[in-house]
Image (cartoon, rainbow, N blue to C red):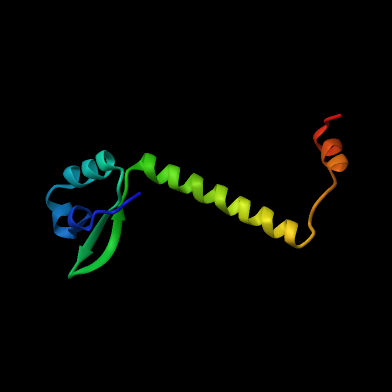
Amino acid sequence: MHVKFSEDVIPLSDLKVNPGKVVGRAQETHRPILLTSRGRGIAVVQGLEDYERTAEELRFVTAVAQGLMDVREGNTVSLEDARKTLGIK
């Protein structure tokens, strides 16, 4: 997801005036919109599908990192034990 600062940073007042336009842009471009107040970022508007995809990707990456830490720390099971646990012969 690439942010275009010339298009994706808008003042909070724009959201207040026309929220549908701001939300529509986020959904159409699949880019988050950064809302600012007095020149500082305060919130992000993102389409629901994009948010859900990002959250799923984060859960996946977190699980992979946890698996790698488990291997590094020796928290593993043998293939035979895994098959027994899963009921696979």
